[in-house]
Structures are given as structure tokens and as C-alpha cells.
Image (cartoon, rainbow, N blue to C red; front, side):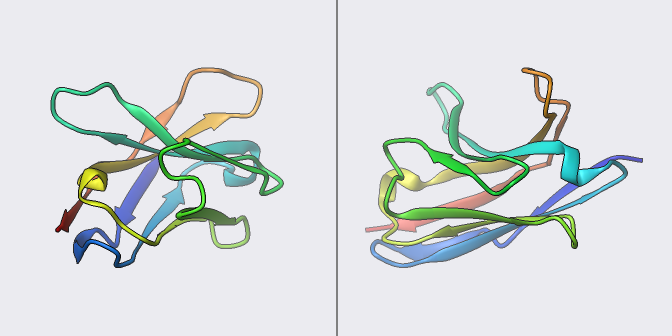
Length: 118
């Protein structure tokens, strides 16, 4: 059974930090590209960060320099370190996995809420 389980969301003040985690199970994690998405009400889904199998990362311009994604292929985990948080970072965050040869995401987590107050 495939599972992606996020944790670590919560509340923070502007300028603060949070660390999100995603634990994967039920598939060969090292063969999948992992991403963090966020979806705010009334807005389109945004890919926040993508990390390839070898750890190569790409980021949305809106989080570049503030967020850092990492993965541990031995523990099947994905992380997102979020620093210098802004109120506009407030929304649900999701981790997702796609097989490295595919363009569509195969699996999604249930999401974790991040709330940043000014």
C-alpha cells in the first residue's frame, strides 16, 4: 500500500521557520522524483520545490533562497526546511511522487497546514 504522510506543519510568525517532513512507503522511493506543492484557496496549485533522485533541487521563485528541500533515500523521507516565512506562505502543503520517466505525479500525501502570522 502506497503512502505519503506529511508532518511538521503548524503555526509560525513571519520571519520564523518550520520544517515539513514526508515519509514514503509502498514503492521504490529512490526511483521517484519528489516534489512539494502548495495550494491556497482561489489560487492555482504551485510546485514549491522538486528534488530529483540524486538530490538535485529546483524551487519556485517565490521561495528561492528561503526554502530548502532534501531527501534521504535510505529512510524514504523528504523534507522541506522553510525559513524567513511570510504570511503569503500560509496554505496547505503536499508532498507528491512521480516515477522518474513520467510527467504525471503518481501519489500524493494528505497535506499539512502551514499558517504564518504577521
